[in-house]
Image 1: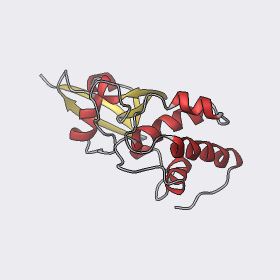
Image 2: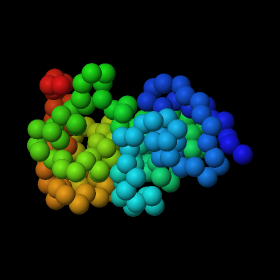
Image 3: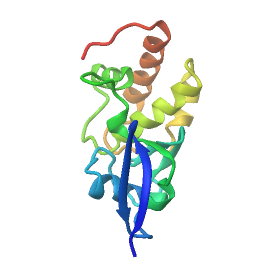
Image 4: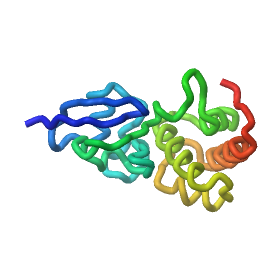
Length: 162
């Protein structure tokens, strides 16, 4: 029997029906049509489906859709300002830190979670914060440099180009 859920996703109130065993990732992708969060492992090991749930970084594949009742979820689609890029996204582009794109949505969300709580991290802190996000393509160094650069941009309030 489907469960009726009222939630807020990317700042917008939503309501949906989901099966009791449907994950938040399935709800995002299949029910709400938000396909930015990727399914990499479906066991919480890769970080590709990372989202912010009530401000906390979680893997959407490990949260039941029914658990979204009354809660606020921010997916990759809710990170950037309308018509632009978040500084983290812009710096990933500038640093050529993306290749296949499977891990990047989760990395952006994890980096945002870090910078929301620590606007001036050092390299070790960034590496630790992103340790739950696996990338098979980049080798991580460009990603780490991009996040550090985004943090500096965000601290100074400098504009990034869209």
